[in-house]
Length: 152
Image (cartoon, rainbow, N blue to C red; front, side, top):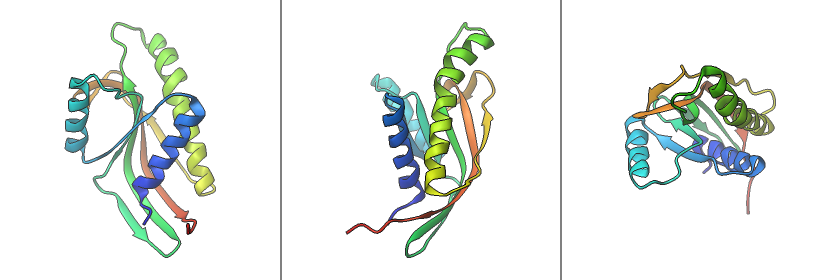
């Protein structure tokens, strides 16, 4: 059974390949994701850039050859650069990392369902999320109906 999480993970993997570096993928409840990321940080594991699917409020309908779902909140993020101007953050984080990931992810999802509407809003600068200071953007209320190709 293919789920909404599987679809976003596959799209993120394809974006990693297209962009030429690893984009981390996490999902779970807000508290669960925060706890997991704190453990990774303590071990010096790669955390960012990341696509994070928050599972609170996900609705999903499985059909024979498709899955229809709505994901209320996805975050594309990386660690904030301290002591940089807003213009420097825009150039080094948003223009170089966040927006290219968003565009490629949008393209991947659009290939799965033509004309999918993806609403992006930037996080407030130096936002404290997941017990870390990050920069990035939200994708809110992503709704899709994806045809599942049968594999034998």
